[in-house]
Length: 376
Image (cartoon, rainbow, N blue to C red; front, side):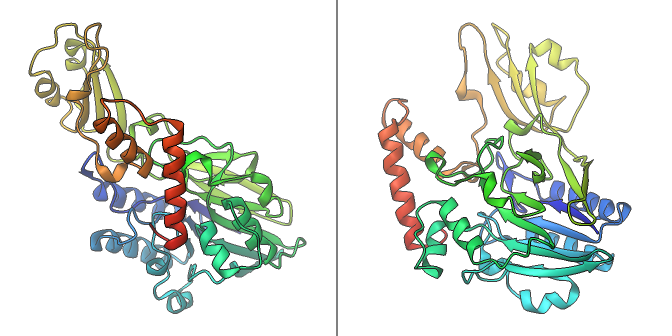
């Protein structure tokens, strides 16, 4: 049986206040085409369907069209919620759409939900683990000692009647220790959300979401599919793709990736103004850094002729070293809670960064908020 593994669509996301929905719709059309070309039996969407827990109607319409096209092409679709999603909104109508071959995680009740598929080699169990916080699991499993994210996931797995003789696929949206991150992910203060990869040793394939760079973690069959688009300039060198997974008999798994091509790439451009002006016209999303000692006062305007979608503009030379005043302001929604706190602290304290003790206090406050409400 062949699966397409994707994640972190973040529909409705903006990058530096630039709307990306048209880019997202275009790349989802590519994924539909790949699913058909690769003759995939099912598509695994490993969380963060939307950018916000209250998604925009336009983003919901794009996702509805995407899933409908997959179903009309005869593909089953499996969806779990991520940390950016509202689990309740994602699971709305979940029981109804099952009849169409769309399987969505419903409200967490202390156990993992699963779906059994069959092929010539027997059963394939799809286990669906949405993004979970320790407080959520603790409420449902009060007898368990749960402090960390790893405690929470291990507690849920202990409740899971896993048959090691069958082929078990896990869909999961968590941060696995050792993976390579970028600026666009929202991670817990101090790495409190780390989970060791060994927790998932019993699963034949683990379809991960949450981290935006496609990568394996400790083994080939424990993988982040990555986001379909670049969502920050720290991802400029990423090669976005979808992962194609062939599950044969027990222990026989083969996978490969298929590249995705955005309508606008995300690029870093550096050099002197005259050199950049000689570069070919491009509508990619760019961050331009110039190194002229005496830059023209209208340098940004001059360069926008060649690069109309300039999101950031910086000057670095022997006098300025780094001129943050000419950078376009980053969208608040692109920043994590810790980044927003750091920005505010620097504004109030003459550009001094917060110390370790400040960050510990912030982490304590955020954990208390988690305990009082699932989505702070």
